[in-house]
Length: 193
Image 1 (cartoon, rainbow, N blue to C red):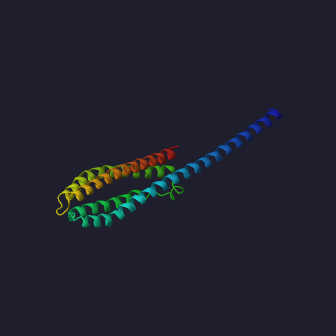
Image 2 (cartoon, rainbow, N blue to C red):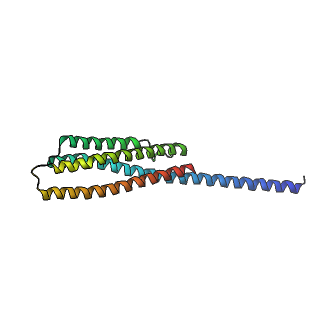
Image 3 (cartoon, one colour):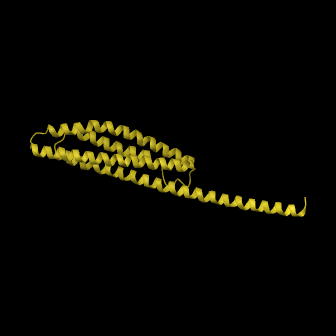
């Protein structure tokens, strides 16, 4: 080989090394960007879960007070309270291992696995909540309809207000559920890339 060939080969090797360094640097930046996006989505998911848990916790004394005022049966109050406590505990247990702080200390595979676990538990809870409501709503209507000493106008107003509340709560709950599932799907897709 001639001296010119050696120079050209050295130049090509240097250019190749520069290219490799730039690609490595882009990969690091890309991983950091994905990590930040995943961290933000997990933070949003956990914030929503904390709000839902807080609403359920605050719902316990509120429903007990309202049901006591309406002279609703003790069994119904206990049933509702146990469900709300169960919802809080289940929500906490589902989300406790999925932390935005752990994203930087975990591999994408670990984050995806934990996110899939939370997604599976969320879907399971949705399947538990629907049958609960199918029992709870008619039972609530029966409790109101069998109350003595309540005027028909008051009873109708209470049932109408409850129906409107159930529809609004159901729609908001379903939208929140879909948002959570979408966020989890996005986290999983980002970690798969």
